[in-house]
Length: 258
Image (cartoon, rainbow, N blue to C red; front, side):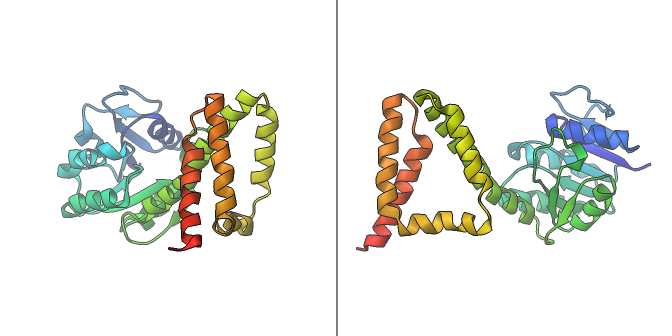
């Protein structure tokens, strides 16, 4: 029976580990804040998680990624796989890979591309690094859709963070817009209108968003200045609106020239 060790049993780690256990995989795990998780044999520390494991999965914060790797480096060996699921900067992924290189274990930089709740081990992922193909073979067999990128640690992380610029920015913009709609008494109308607008976007329309702002920077800057003034009057903090106004002001300067 294949053994997988989990460093980190928070929401994502515990859900993926639970699905693997249900599929007949032997799962060990350790998390100083989570004493037990469904289907997981919890251990007294990280070294016990890695001993005899075909794969060690680190599902922690970017801040803890290096500490997690170092905590098992002494027991990793050639033929093992270390999969770093942490959402960290590409440079940090390369640092973790370099720190583990002397062990001979293969390193996989794994980016989860959707939220784990409701999907578990079936969460789509992008993997890169020397161990990416091995990771895809193993986890693909357990139901995870894995796209393999390059052999470079950090490749998968960079793609995920590029998506995050939009997705997390969109979440912030949506929250600010809906707070404005609430203040104006039109929250439901605004939510429906924004949903229709996003649903109508195809790849060409998405590209047009930026192109249109370049062409119409001056007019749109003035529009966002009016939006910022309205939000301030309503008592809604214009964080996204003010950032948009500043960006458009920079574009307007470029168009007007020196």
